[in-house]
Length: 604
Ligand code: M6R
Image (cartoon, rainbow, N blue to C red; front, side):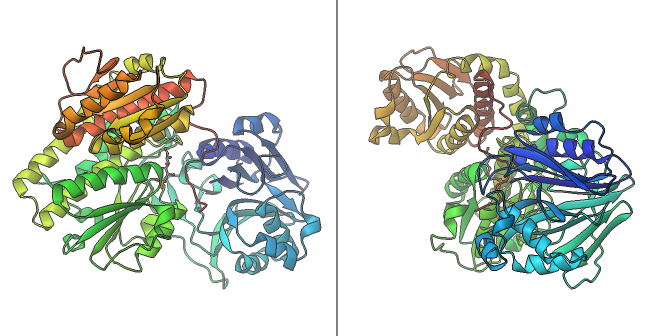
């Protein structure tokens, strides 16, 4: 949570910081601020509650500073107020922070900082501590301070008597940096400076960075200089822009066919799954007795699809754990268990901690991750990168579909290695997976009709998503999408479970979005749908049937393409995403920035 950026170089910093913050806004949008060196050598701060646009409005048009830092906040400690907004200032220090200093109360007591604090934040305590330890040598102050902090942090720090220089240090919370012809950049992620450089390096934990107009010096905590390991991305600034779409979310929904092709194609050789370029050996799958999938939110729901599919096709026990629960529920993992963690950002702290725990039991850990070089990707024994490209909208869309495609590829490989499927069926399966991008294209052509049907939904207080088997797992994601961006209370139910309590909530006009695509349970789902319809529900049914005119089943029928049962979820979820998107804009909300949320959750 929280986005941070720093720039020092030959250009004016203010626009670089504000534009960078705008691209980091998905990390938090409670308040925003910048601080920069004025030509008098003083540090000036501008900050405000609200979004980056609000900050831009109070910034000085004449600001020609070439060195500054900027922050967009997702509140953890203290409410959404100007005083709690970053940057914070204490004596000679001005800083921005992403993360949580867990022992900040203790530090206030031990270092007698109370009188210097005006906000409720842990960050201001850190600023006061840096200031207290500072005697003219920034590196020495940082070395001492970081040994005292408990928790996660990415700091960018300005010292008043070090004009033109930004210092930075991190633990857990991500930070990347680069030096290019315009100067030195540092940020929470690459999207903030991709317009200037496709080259970057991941800031190593507990190393001190000194950024100046002339370059970046990286040192470990003993003061030994270290050479940064530069990486290069294949995407450019346009991938992180809206490209004519009104919102990132809609753009990302439409990017799914391309994202799927990018994720699937490099893993297929001779029409069979092949992970040699990912350095994932077949031995990872050999002797695998069971699988535990761990993730949060949408990634966890993708895992639920993975579980249902793998368990039913390979007859291998698979469990799914919510990452924040996993560590506290005594997981049963042996050396032959495979643990798959799933994360778009690769930085979700609960998922990361779950991975760390899993590694104590098994070497068979595999991460399905979208962001290259992220912490989860680096710490997992094996990584399968999804190639969705940057996902900026807070509501995950394309990341989910490529995660499912990754599970399907893994399932196919696992089945072959364990001898549970033969090559002929594996080839057929891969052939069907390759068709998913085209099938989604067909669905996207119906986007306008989905917009039309959401008009009925925007006045609803509650909505229900029901289905059985894979359709049920998918419904969980449908409900999450709708509630997180339209604020309509939505729940997913296994269609057969409704009558055990929840059906009491169905009354006249309550929208029920039902999915009936799985042949083996089709007639049972239809019966369950009739049950809610008989109680007044407004039923929107997704199925592969040519036409459903029976008014005792549904009010609206959306016909899905005739794809095999295991693959219809790719089509259905796109409809769900569009329903959520249009419900959100129909209610006048910004689907890219739903209230109270942030894209990557780096607090436990
Ligand atoms: O980056 P991650 O995939 O680890 O994020 C996990 C969840 O926070 C995330 O999937 C969240 O549920 C979605 N943004 C919701 O749309």
